[in-house]
Length: 334
Image 1: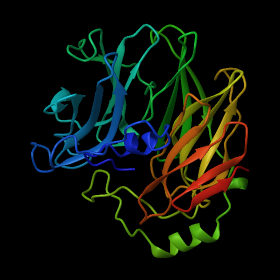
Image 2 (image 1 turned 90 degrees about the vertical axis):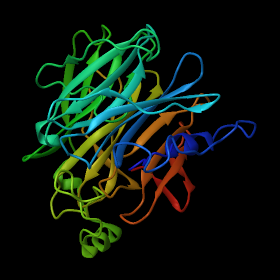
Image 3 (image 1 turned 45 degrees about the vertical axis):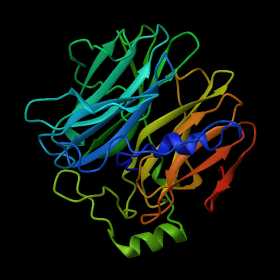
């Protein structure tokens, strides 16, 4: 999902809040007003004073050496001018993630490397809600941290981060779990979907027949990174984790598969162990997703329906198995 300067995710989530809640949709900055022509993979966090901070990666194009992490703050007077938060020398940055840990520290995790298969990760922290930041800390090899969606912070402060690896051997989701505010980590996985479950649907066959209608570029020059379903099961990445209650956690993951469906996996012990993944009946043309649990227990997910469709949102009552339809997208969990 490309959130191109617009707070689309915030608008969609707000649309499921009570009628009295105010919903807005606005540009963080006007297109063409910055030094970077492209923006991608935005993240947003509510600060302690109820203002908002957003971050994204921006540069000449996705994967270009000038791509840095940028951020802006939304106050009552509007959005601040974007500022550079992080840059790696002659190396593109990717997928920033903003979140608070239980102790109130604001964290920014991001990835850097020529391509996803070469990613390493770094992080910074702030004790004054992003006014100043710590020096950049590079994570040890093998740790990525939250790869695109925010981690889940449990009541005891445990961080449960959805991570993933993209390599020549395929894609796989992982969980990176920390009980000491990110000082040490346990890496759990890989979490994959068995090939026996990767069955093409009529919709995915039709998409495959269309070919790569939006040329996926990554590091070689296209504008959108969308793919038709492959002829084999490549795998799943970028998990978004939701607390279902009573130590039951569920991850929802993007897939690049013949089934062209969102995948899920479950943990019944607060993320220590996980099932292998399975598909549910929600489409996913290898495009980013996100999911959050609202205060009333409902789960909101945003996802793309088809290669040429805009992103939509569905609502899931926590104790039921049907996703509420929105813009024609609904489905029963399998």
